[in-house]
Image 1 (cartoon, rainbow, N blue to C red):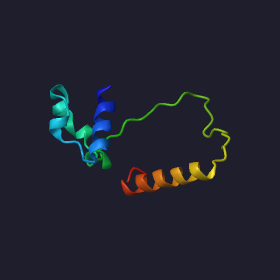
Image 2: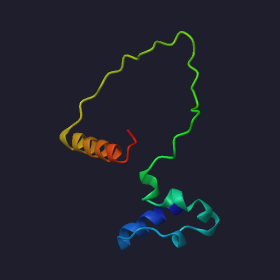
Image 3: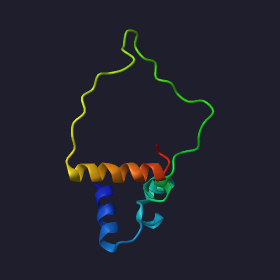
Length: 89
């Protein structure tokens, strides 16, 4: 509920959220609420977790793709562009 209130406040004032806007009990985690901090990934680690796959699972799935309308295609392109800029992909 509080996340919706923060988002609404940010939109109304067209300003960025500040640490003081985060409730006291969450202020030690303020970075997760800040837009600028969310634009980067955590640092790379030497060891990565692995996901063990079950035996007998095909290496590739036969998935159907669904066509997108013009609006959906534009939204997808914008999201991909943002993710490339942030180096998420």
